[in-house]
Amino acid sequence: MRFFALSNFKDIVLYLFPTLVFMILFGLGLSYARFRVRGPEDEARENRIIYHFAAGIKDRDVGFPLVMTLIIAGTVIWAFFYILMHGLLGVKI
Image (cartoon, rainbow, N blue to C red; front, top):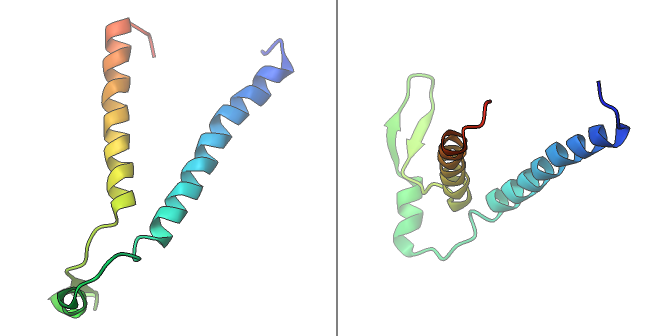
């Protein structure tokens, strides 16, 4: 039972705004992932099919978006330090 109704609103804001910021940054990062300086060999490499899967899916040798790399690395680093700090401070989860 909450004694203050404002606490519920603060909890929602603390969950909602980081999620919205993440979704906006993720969408912007993916939308600009293809705009980069390209050389003449990049076009040929991206069009060459290197593997055919059974369902008709074709695999190409294209780069992984930088924003996805940063998001995955940030999640792993955050999880590591989250576990470390809870262990060092003795917080019960």
